[in-house]
Image 1: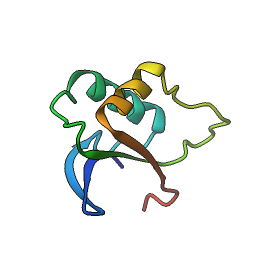
Image 2 (image 1 turned 30 degrees about the horizontal axis):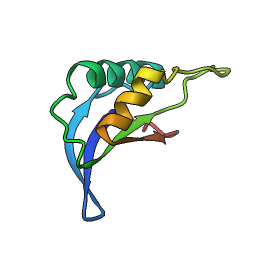
Image 3 (image 1 turned 120 degrees about the vertical axis):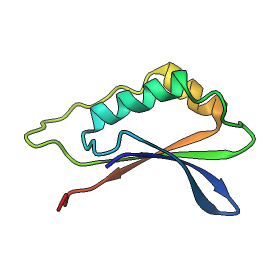
Image 4 (image 1 turned 135 degrees about the vertical axis):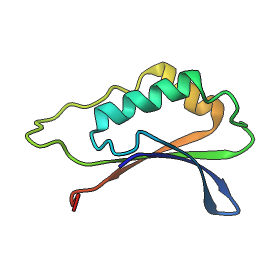
Length: 93
């Protein structure tokens, strides 16, 4: 899947940016999101409600674990008014 960065306007999402296209693993997608958030998200207005929709598929053979959402990531999302949606997809066909 990928990560869609959208803004919420009048109750509707407006697509703005797509990251990590064709990546389905949550740990990899979260690294992409973290890198973008810390280096390339400075132009987001904090006066707008933003959504980062991270679409992923369960890893085959996974027994738990996953990415850590660091305090820096949480602070940055709060400062930029970004909510994180985790969208899980089981059927990749």
